[in-house]
Length: 437
Image (cartoon, rainbow, N blue to C red; front, side, top):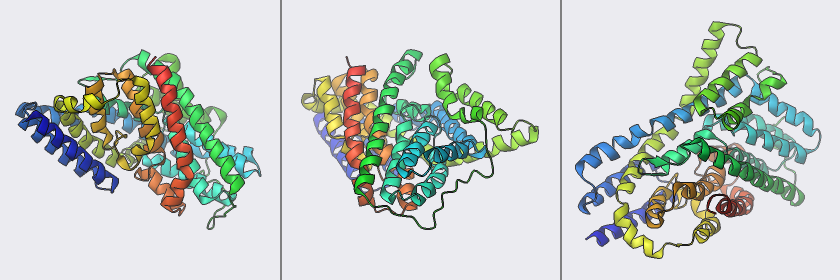
């Protein structure tokens, strides 16, 4: 009976992969999967009613509360950077520095975007930066596919440091109540890798810009102008350091994410002249926090339903392990190489992304290998960051960029995949040597 139930779990897992790849609603899909796996687990004798009632459908969403707070604060911080004019001013300085060299300007805009998203988070922040960056790129003759590809890959480049996404992933990849990035030592270990990942990822962007401009034709966009709209706001050098402050405070002083962001917000308001009036402070904080929450509302809803499925999948691991363990690679290097070679399976919410069907893959791999979270976390985070959030069309801000630049999805994928997939492979190899040895 247990073997039959395990096979049924795998069949529903494969069906969910197909459903996700075809663009099915993931919130509803995850809820149905949680119901199905809870029912099958109950039939298989590994789940009882208290587990279904308390652990899966109630404990899943409520246990995600701390991570939701990190996501909201990261999104709020992004809105602060936009509202104070800090983001716009940094972008304008990059354009001035690039002068009349479109390739150099494109690379400078990419590094600015990457640095902003080491701390900022959320579709709203990506869109707000994009509507500034895209007209500049397009008016300089950067081809539309290259503009879209370089921008979204720059957003992804910053996410190796982004505490909002990192803690979100840690809340998804849990073994029991344990999760990675729960201690200062683990954060320190991760940041060492993040530096390497940022450099490798950005090199892939630079190569894309250089090689694409050599073989491509210049294409000017519709009514695009090189002007940067900063809403008339210009800020000084100290204010422009704001995007780096949360990561700096975390690495150097071990300050937690929320107080680090609060300190950076105060810094931003101080050095942009927004601390002169109590009413002005209250108005800006209230407006940006409201907009920040609105930006990530659907993201949080998706993650709440995802937690239900995670809990149900974790409860069913004893039914899956006997089937999967015999065919699971026992060599850790082989596992990292497999994830690197098959990184494309993180596209369209496939089996290698924890933001889709890969959450079940994580449970299967964790139960079959008994590897520690310090190894499983980078193994799974790389495809979901380097591929899913970086270039996958199912990611909301990637789809927005594709639509804004009026690029065909196939042309977009031809532009980014030759650089994103090798980047993911290289990062898996680097991660093996940094985490598994």
